[in-house]
Amino acid sequence: MNKLQRTPKKLAFEAFCFPGLLTLFFVTMGVCIGLLLNLVKNDIHSEILLLIISLIIFILNFNYVTCIFDKNLGMLILKYKGLSGTHITEYGLLEISSVQVREYQTQIGINTYRLTITLLSGENLHIYCPPINGVESAKDLEYSIYSFLSLVK
Image 1 (cartoon, rainbow, N blue to C red):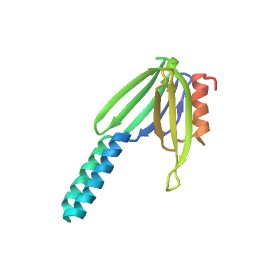
Image 2 (cartoon, rainbow, N blue to C red):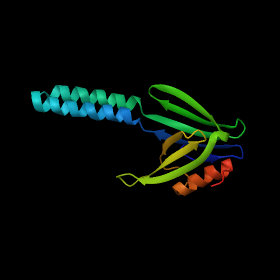
Image 3 (cartoon, one colour):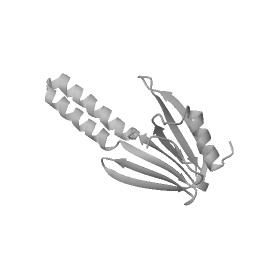
Image 4 (cartoon, rainbow, N blue to C red):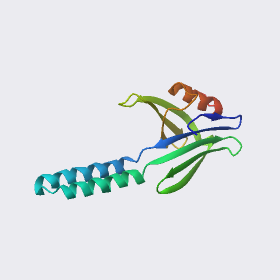
C-alpha cells in the first residue's frame, strides 16, 4: 500500500515496526558474546553461530503494520504481519487522545516518521513509517490523522 488512502470513513497506510528493545538487547548480547568467544578461544564458528541466531531472532520479530482508522467500525485497526504470522489489535477511535508524528532522517538520507498514538489510558502506540506517497512531511501525516479524527490539538 505505502500510500495514504483516505475516504470519508476510512484512513489507512502501511508502516513497519522495529523489534522491541528486549529483542535488540538479546541480539546485541549475542553478538558481544560471540566476539568474546572469538577473542578468548579464537573460535570463529561460535561467533558466526551466535550472529546467525541473533539475526534470526531479529528477523522473526520484524513486522509490517497496516494502520486503519475506520469510522464505520469506530476502530483503529493495527494489522501486524511478519514471519511469525499475523496479529490484529483494535482500539476504539474514542480512546485516542492525541497523535504526534516526528520526522527522522536515516544515515542514508531517507526520511522516516515515528507516529505516536496516545490513548486515554496513557498507553502510547509507536509506529515507524517509511516515506508515504502523498505525504510531504511528518506534519502532513499528523494533520491528516487529526483532521480525519476531528481531534483538537
